[in-house]
Image 1: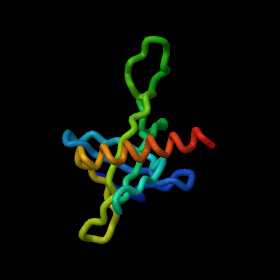
Image 2: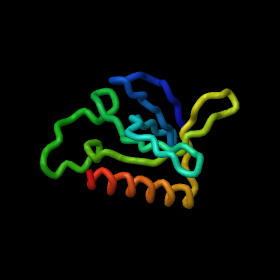
Image 3: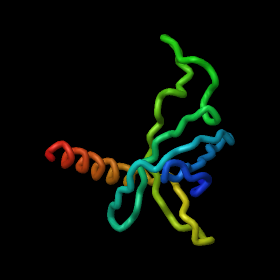
Image 4: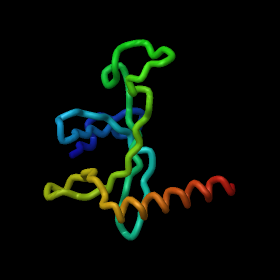
Length: 110
């Protein structure tokens, strides 16, 4: 599903993810969220001239490449000892979303 260390970009890892149709997307790890002894990552889609459509974005443009896709992925270690990003279960997703919202609330209080 994903590759880590594909490219280092401004001290962040550019993560390549491929969907079931073979489409490739790139993400940057925005935040790590530990929940119940597991580690999850908030991933934000990355765009540049190599990873985006090649046109000017005017009013009414609905290509979608300016909209950042944000996903939550579970970080697991595969059989080769490398970290992979996998889709969390619905229950895991709900717990991570709750933990993330709690973090945001705490930041607002500061």
